[in-house]
Length: 239
Image 1 (tube, one colour):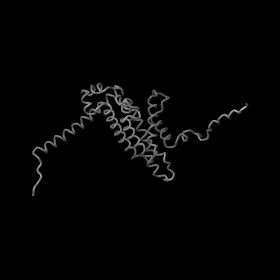
Image 2 (cartoon, rainbow, N blue to C red):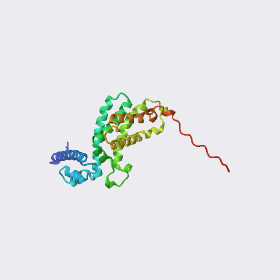
Image 3 (cartoon, rainbow, N blue to C red):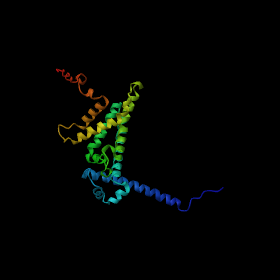
Image 4 (cartoon, rainbow, N blue to C red):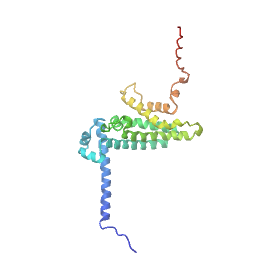
């Protein structure tokens, strides 16, 4: 019986290729960690040259691994999302209800932003070379799509418990709208200087969860009883 015989040295080539691939992955992960530390220290406006200097290497190395600054933002954003997913999986195990699961996710998002505002801004701002508006940035779309999917999971669980006929179609828009609220509230919160006028992370997470889950009426006592101001009656034609 004829047998296929691997070319001489093929195993050695495959082994070297595997080792090189693992080396590149390890090097890339190390560069992302160093870039995070540099942005945390320098600020979200850190240039590729400053980030490379902090990594004790050249800009060309970062361009080789990430392509451009947008690629580095995307890679750092992926790492942030990965870390959040680990926290959320653990929180989901301890959540007794979909509402608790949603709150855990909102809290994880706020904690991520608060732990390093500089890194948060870096991974959520459009890359300068993209020339695109905030919502048009591929980097941002990837980042917020992942967060939206995570926020959607507890609401999907909640809706699964409700009669199908009571679920309105517009709720399909809820996940993206939710991350818009969490993001806007979180970024405004980060802009408030520490002090008595700035709510704690826990208080803000509670409030956002109420707004998302129950609606604004539930957070304002007797809000449903507030009347809409009456319009002035039309002027009579006295001609």
